[in-house]
Image 1 (cartoon, helix red, strand yellow):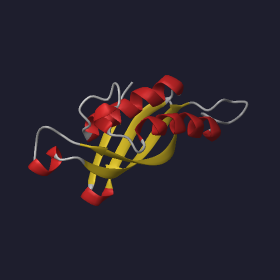
Image 2 (cartoon, helix red, strand yellow):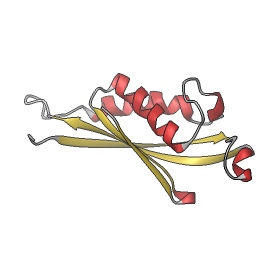
Image 3 (cartoon, one colour):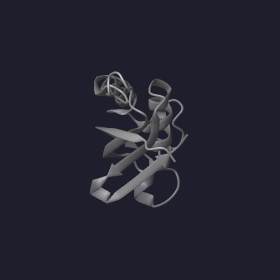
Image 4 (cartoon, one colour):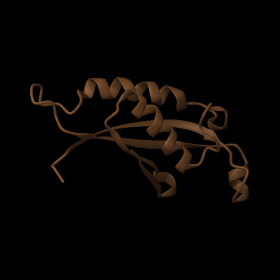
Length: 121
């Protein structure tokens, strides 16, 4: 396999949600701080040396963050049930639509010691 370059950008957001299944405390409206790392992979441009300019990555991820930050995740269109798994898939799809090199999204809730990683095409 030819060598590939990876770059990552992080962002965070705070949001509320509730889950209809699982432990009873999850059924009540509650909030979390989420920490996200988005990874892009590919070959850098031979002229610029960039896989993707970090300014472009940051601008795209700010748009994704705006969809989630200080929202009730149950009401975010296209997200579905707001589990960590679905949030990771949602971020991946939105980021990849703007940055085709996106290959992985890692989302963390450190207060719970939880992490979810989604790797997609």
